[in-house]
Picture 1 (cartoon, rainbow, N blue to C red):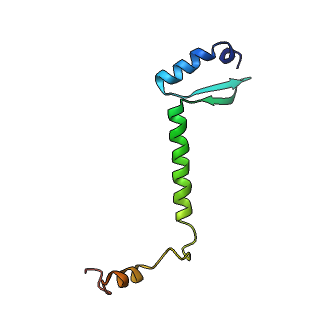
Picture 2 (picture 1 turned 45 degrees about the horizontal axis):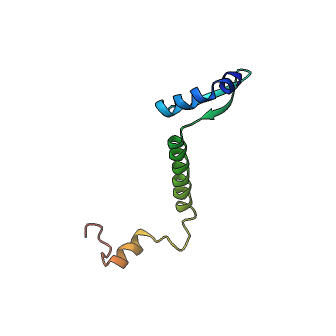
Picture 3 (picture 1 turned 90 degrees about the vertical axis):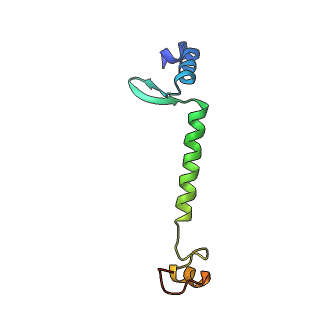
Length: 83
C-alpha cells in the first residue's frame, strides 16, 4: 500500500499501457485492484449480460414462454418435426 501511495502515477500509467490489473496489498494480503477504465467497463457489461441471461432463464411458467408444441402450432408446422 505504501509503495502504491508513493508511486500512484506510475501504477496508473502501467495499467493504462498494459491493460493488466494491479493487485494492491496491505500487510501481504490483497486490499484492492487497480483496473483500466476499459477493463472495468468490460467486467461491468459482462455482469449485466449474465444477470439478464439469468433473469431470462427464470421461472419457465412465466407468460413469456411457450412449449415447443405450441411454437410449432403457432408457426403452422404441425406435429412433424421434419416440416
